[in-house]
Length: 362
Ligand code: C2O
Image 1: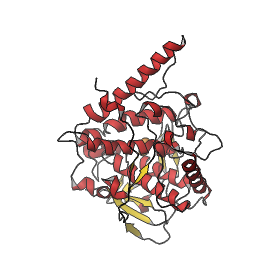
Image 2 (image 1 turned 60 degrees about the vertical axis):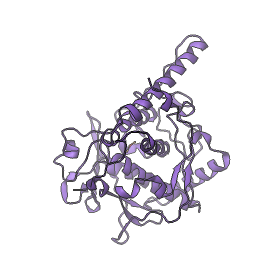
Image 3 (image 1 turned 120 degrees about the horizontal axis):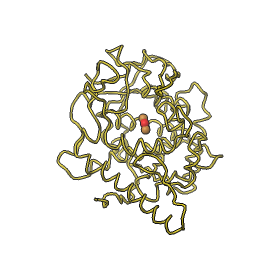
Image 4 (image 1 turned 135 degrees about the vertical axis):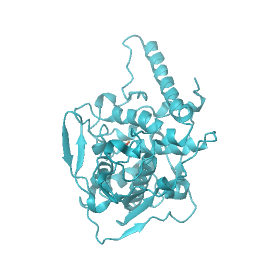
């Protein structure tokens, strides 16, 4: 059966770091009335483009920052408040909900075919809320273009300590301009020798990142199951039994570049590596939403790549799985996977930028 979160069952989230473990409260504020609205894609056919974070201009930045500032300033129990938004990730990723019809089964949106749809809709409502707060329903948020050489460091606009886009819980050694290693999330190691060695090593890191992208988007992602991850059906026996396959399994990008970037940004502090280094806290870093913008963009790009089997699943059990979000008007909305397959029906797409890894065939 399709997966659906059971709102009434929401309880504490469990954050397990192997050697140690803690419980955190991440449930959304209670519904005003018990109405849940079924999602309708926005009317109108205009597409708005999410810009690459390293290319935005000052006017855009001003708008984005004011929106974020307002989101952070909302009352703490407003479901649109920034911390409440961050907690959505915690609730869906650290077992706060059980599944409708299966009270003993926790819901988890990672490591399966729910990964892309869940994060797409999470970002969608986050963006709608930002737009509402500045009175601009056409507002789009930026994406972190880490798959391209000019985007392989943390985007500048997130690094100003006085900006609402800043987060102190990051690996400061990776700021301001350290190249990410998309292979494992470690930083690129500077050689201690002369400048030309440095340039050479840098070029090697960039090439290696492009190669990683080619692998995860093209070579190893020829089917929906490879790209999206394993099926995840309602009522699986245990958390380790996601998809009722022996192993929960994320797709190529989810397991690869996506995790690497989380690790790269999160602080070095064990055991939880907040914020980006742990699911429960990742949404507290504004950079999370730009990171996932690019992950979401990969879904769009993947569907344009050639290959007979390179298209989404058509199983109803996937298409009818659903998530719940508060929208920009504080209404609780139920979204199905089938509602979000095409970002254009949601009214957005991504600024078109060069995709150098398409040419990085080994
Ligand atoms: Cu829900 Cu990048 O993780």
